Length: 83
Image 1 (cartoon, rainbow, N blue to C red):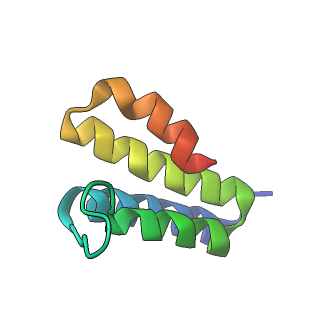
Image 2: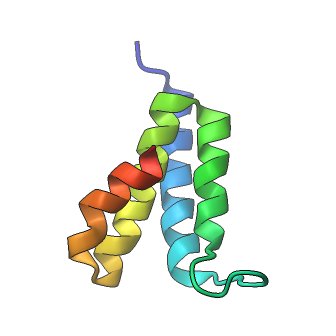
């Protein structure tokens, strides 16, 4: 049984993660690898649970790699951010 609310929230968090990773840069402490999208990845895991959180984090981060031109890193990003 598929829960429609969880599917919609998963798509929302995936889109937010992609947009935040690509556009918003907030680097107060670690200028190299601090992205606002990472906060949304963690929040999606906490709010959606393991399965839907994995999908939201993985798809959103993977899409930011695909749209940003980093095609080689997309599968690895999907797995790492999802986990």
